[in-house]
Length: 143
Image 1: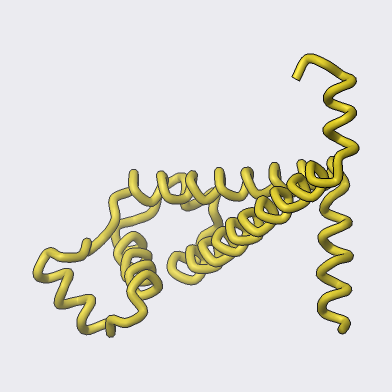
Image 2: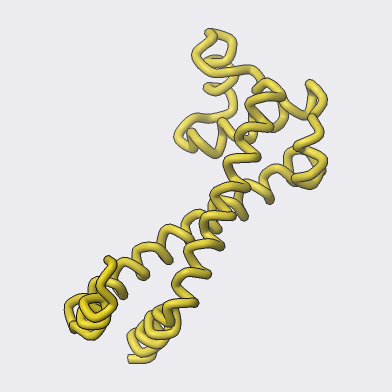
């Protein structure tokens, strides 16, 4: 918008404020989901390899990639037992190990998701809506 008066009029409308708050809430849900996913990924990386994210970006050995692949497959397919995963790997239906490029790409995507989550939370904090949503959640849980 190029007209400041029209922008001020929209900012004062009740429906506009409600829509903005709703969009911020949706953004925060997405940010929370991305943060949870990133936390799970980092803890799984540490469990499978014993290395931090920076060391993983440098590269993993073949054995570490096999272990990481097994862990990821068991997380992504909880309905399958370890034996069923192994059989599917032998049949070529599932990968035996991810390549270094795939591990690196996945790690970078998780880092970008985390950056997006921080960006969403920062935007909600700047608009002041994060305080309103937090108070609303607190009021709902205390009843």
